[in-house]
Image 1 (cartoon, one colour):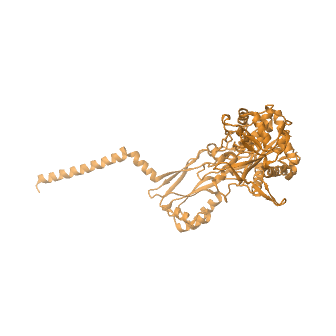
Image 2 (cartoon, rainbow, N blue to C red):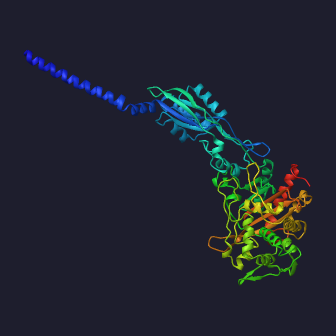
Image 3 (cartoon, rainbow, N blue to C red):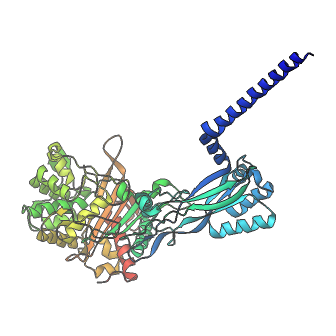
Length: 564
């Protein structure tokens, strides 16, 4: 090789080396300068994790300060799958301590991942036991995050009011959902640092978060427990599909108890049972509406308790025969007697005297046809047609609670106005003062109606006499009440012959009520066998919800919560 050829070869080699170096430098510039953020983020994603853990959720208290829902310390437990040891032992341990199913435990343990949630919201005792047994067995790779677990120290009390919380600490139903933002605060952030091999080397709290705020209720756990027990008794005794009980303070509109049966339990975890159907569902109230229609007529000066009416059956309206219960005719009777005996043909005449415009105006002022604003989610507005759509027949059947649909809270609140002298309160389950909504009727009209409702309880032939029959305490409280038996509409049109809705609204003492109690039963069998009379008899709201009201009054009295 000549000297000239050697020089050319060397120059070519240097050129190639230069081009290679230039490519490397260019690539370094691309990676470290132009694409620095991209690759830094990728490396951080591989080596660092941020885990979000809910902070302590606010406590929910009843009106006496008793905790109904509160957070207690616990763990959320995860697994570093690539660096665990003894997977077969871990699968068994997860089944034993955390109660995971065999397939679920195996799927979590053998998953190919740096991070797998094993369980969230684990109580502290179970978490500590898992940690200790894993250490004794030489199992590695478990990650324990301090967190909070929702607990209900009063047991399964008022689940349809309180609601539930999901594993991520978010409210899912009831007050837990309605006040989720206030209760949950801001979550804690944990930083997880990994080495190049993916192993977790460090774990620290990046942001401790902010605890949620507490919530105080108007609900009283003692009243609630009595209502839950007695409405369950009533559903089982009278073979109803479901039932609810409501107790309110008529002056303030505070809801002291809101119970239902069947209830949400671990054995009956139906999500629908977490909805308070006295808030979310509507029903035709039946003859309880007679007291409200009568109140409107008394307030207008159209009638007095002694106004005489023809109580015969049937009464023809728009060509339609309207009967009294069981078709009974009463002859000429006073309005007072019509309330005591719940006479359809008298009340429809009262409604016709009022007319559509006036009756509609009173019903709107009583809170029907619109949500009350109670703080529970999913409240229904009810059904109340505008007066221009009412014929005489609509007026007539509305007088005994047909053709209108209401919620339990609407009905209870309207009777609060009757109880307190004519002011519609704003129903509320959260503690605190609420401004009243509007004036409904005069104090004198309210007092007259309550006196007639008192006779419906005190008279042996009154439709609510069952209240005092089952409750010695009720006999000393001078209870006033109105019963109702509503027909149930069926999807194909018309009404069911097999089932009815039964309800009773009571208040005591009649001259200055301190409490309003409403009990309602849905899907009551319309008839039942009476073994004492050896015959089939009709089922009424007074004979089903009435005894339940008496049982509730007796239960409250035995706890010293009410007295004559």
